[in-house]
Image (cartoon, rainbow, N blue to C red; front, side, top):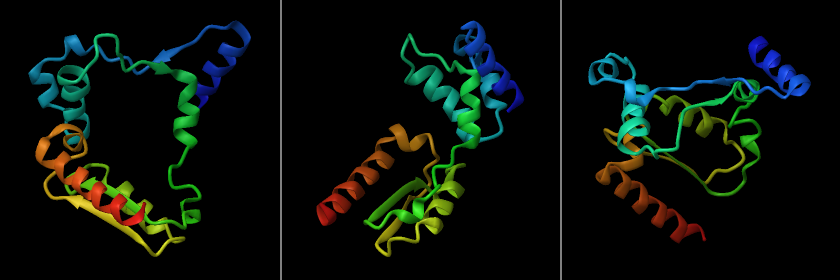
Length: 147
């Protein structure tokens, strides 16, 4: 937070923007990627860095934005949702705990579902046809029932 706060102060006082998080995707080797211990980051390096990367994209972000990232909570006031709610995730997603937490906190609706695609990791839900098809079919069912 201190680093992000200092970066924000610098932006305001000097106009200089500090950048963090830049990844040199071209320098990543198969060996270095294979050493990343979590599916989310290992598969993310492949997906965002190789197979689905736009030539102009980077992982760079402003250092000052870290304050917002650290303090923002997607489930803040989720209990106010009083409409049908569908949360979807892969059963092997590193981020599944976040979906489960959101589901538990969404107490304003009784019409809610946590739909899991068996065997899918977080990144695989973006592009693996058998997983994407299950999500699309679930969305069609959900929207067909509630819209």
